Image 1 (cartoon, rainbow, N blue to C red):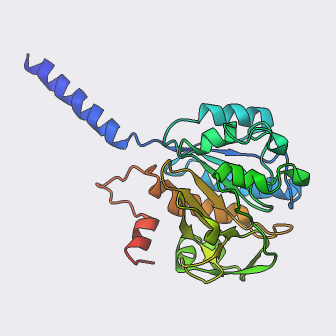
Image 2: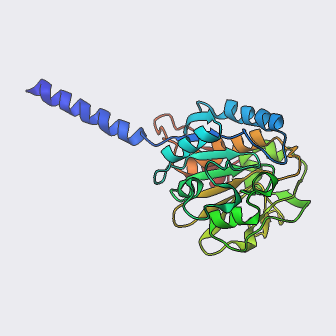
Image 3: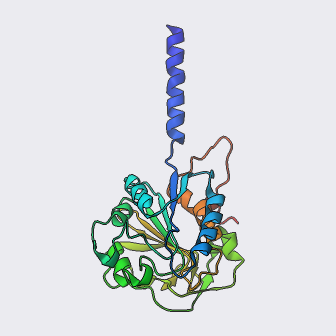
Length: 276
């Protein structure tokens, strides 16, 4: 009897321990089949840098580089509430998840993915614009449900913020970014907010333009991570995005299981506490 009780207690401890550390990891899908404002080869190079850096890291689950058809299947499989999974783009959104010409303004695979609390990232051209202007301004407007939001203003100088300096060592080494398609923070409605600007026109969080930055929907928690939307995209966006995902994102979405016995350091926790 005592042995049975001991075994039951041990199983309970294991179950509780497993539950406490069974924090959902962030799966990442990288899309490079079509690109805009950056060559496919250059995009693939940055994608490879990103994938090499994040694979196997705390809070990160499976990392895949998929074509249009497979990307759509991946997105549908990851459209679950509060997944916080990440879809990475280089200037183009695949028509398999957001049909060209804004043919499905509402209820696209991409929108459903976002509205379950998942994340899109984009480097190079305008968010959701589409190759050759396939979607133009309505792409972003439909995805965010903000009719008038745009992403113009060529050569807008972005000054590194203190958050950007601490989260991204890569970004901290760069000269000021001349963003050609910055996020228009002043055009966000009541449903969206600037979660954090890593660089902005003002050099802080009180700004009208930002890039790189994270924009978040307040109700369902979907995120748009913009990383250097610039012509030709000469910036090391693979490393910058890796910095953001590893040093900020996985913690704020709860993907890190903190081992209190080992007291593992947390970059973002240190930042919030004012540490370097």
